[in-house]
Image (cartoon, rainbow, N blue to C red):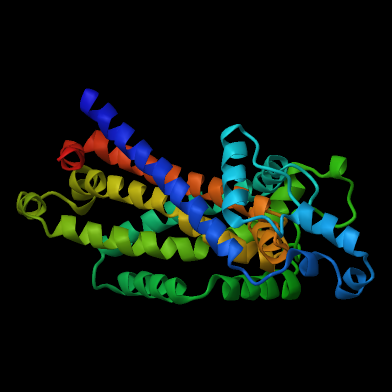
Length: 329
């Protein structure tokens, strides 16, 4: 147990260092951006009609004249005290904006994460156990095709087919247009989230399918499985006794690692479907030069992604002691 705790502690420290590196990199990239916050959020005509005193106040509000290192250190000090700053676009605290947007995105991403993991694992097993057959070729072809298809293109295609032509799902947004917030039901939110979630899960399925298929083939070609076949064990018995336990943990690890892909894909999907989630807030903050909001979303998103990888590492460390030994050495 002590070895496991040391292993967990080392992975936790590594995750904190990665978060620090992500925040520094994000801040440098934002500082190097050619976007002028004043021109991005105030029209050129309105900006020209302002007095110099008003422009100075706006520049002070947006932190235009402050040195980047001063802005970053001030942000870090406030963040360590639980204050992520105030969004310059939404006029609210960054924490409250992230909570509002994340609550919309979580349902979308969790739904897509479960769909991609479950279907991808099943199809990978089915393909691996029928290697070389027609069903294997169909599943592998589907996985290769969807893996190479851009997420935004799939989103546009699904929107055109299922919303415009067939009218099965709403065209966009997370709630019906013009409906009062108190009148929106859970079924309304689910109806608006189904198509974006399915679109988001399509590309995530392919990686799990291909990875699970290769692991399944490796297991079926192993010596102990060949011995089981020689003893007369049937295919289902071989899968239950030898296949499942050898491919389950790698599949779980890959599933947690796919959180980053879900996050990345959600930005494009939310833009296409006009879904007011965290991904759309990232684009708005980036185009508007809202540095506090952009940094807050970047760090929180990275923390969720790193947490998924952290859980995967811990699961591997619990099941396979060789992982802990390798990390210790």
